[in-house]
Image (cartoon, rainbow, N blue to C red):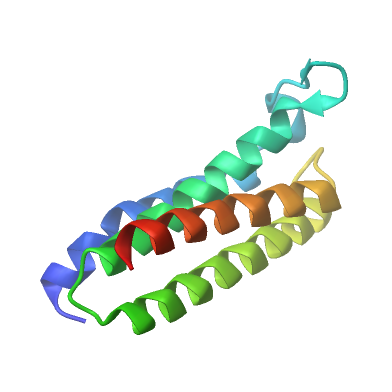
Length: 126
């Protein structure tokens, strides 16, 4: 990977680091609020955080000169890796973050965010 290519991924790498730091923040640092009854703001935040991560890694590929078929394969791989990172982050929260726990619905929201990024980039760049 050359320097120019690496620089294009810098926002995604920076966002990944920020999200990782937030994973270790104590659970009592985050507000527990709900909108419209049972819809938790937390789930929307998860989808947004992981969706943005997907976009920040997919867009540099989308704007590259890579053939469309390979772009789609990279987009799929990125979405899968981000979804798996969401799952791993839930285990990190369960075993190492103070006041945090494993929440399967959080992982689902992470995966939905990654899937939305995939759909957006596939439509826009292929």
